[in-house]
Length: 445
Image (tube, rainbow, N blue to C red; front, side):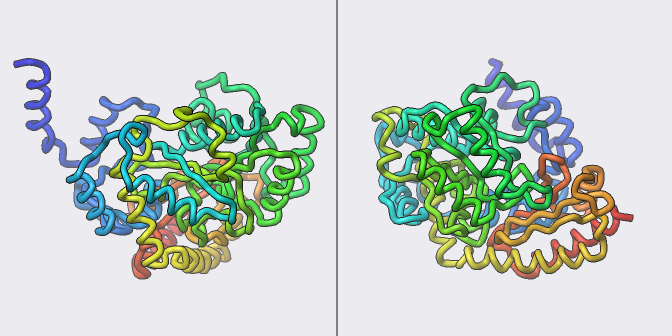
């Protein structure tokens, strides 16, 4: 028997041999690099909207959404139908070789929906990191400048350049340097930690005075709400000030909306909260309900700076993902998920602030004013300078034991982040919040 035939027979015989989460985790530890670690040692069998079931039949409320990917819930029937229809026609041709109409229609819709009135164009890739890389390439081509400014605590991807932009060290940057040059960093305004907008703006001007002139800066990139950094929102006034600085100096303003886009924050795009028009927007995650696709959307005169053939990728704008993304946009509109996101945020805020009143020494801040992108910062003695990462670890584990999937974040590793599907039913929201309260009370003793 040749090796391929042997492996095929082995897989067929072995696929049902493991029936528990522990058995699958043991196999995973042997087969997959340790660097690609998993937060929860559970193996999912099926999902429906905001619920998941593992291989042992255990049921979970999902407050993670695959890190803000399944905004439209797990296996939304309209997305399933769109993908099935596309697969039956064809799965891949490469949009740069023989394109297809779904990519054109998706680009047209994104251009129309993006903030601002300037004419727009889009380009497609496969991952969020690729979108950021290409946004930087486009900005450099447009400005003929070299430098890029990012912010402390920002997260922009796992490729070498995007890691250089990322302002959170462990675990993302550890062991992987050196990183590219011409990347500069400024403090992100976080009033809870004593960093004011004025200090951040002053730091930018200090960069211009001491390290790099504004005439050498191609782009400033910012998350309207920091993701991995801790779910800290940039205030409307700060985003407006940043927009003014970029306009004054001819710098391309890039809004990294990979986690905040597609209704997550109570607007279709988080930049809309500040009523600004970024020059470029990067999107991915919630764009296609779990199918891999990402994009850069931007002002036409900037987007067209790259030469023909200078942008793209083999799987860029996959026809399957384009079909899913078009279905997602229809679902967001038809099911009014932007408004739903705002409603979800209000419910979470009410419950979490009540819990904060009971545990003021442990819950430092509740951040729930950006739709269904919600955070709880855990501290010791009510002190923002004393992060409580131990409590966070115990809480994530206890919640999982109680049937609730949560995520953590923050450069101090002390923030619970809540990212429920925007399609989540009211009763499941209440169930999940009750499970969270039960879990918190258990570990807070």
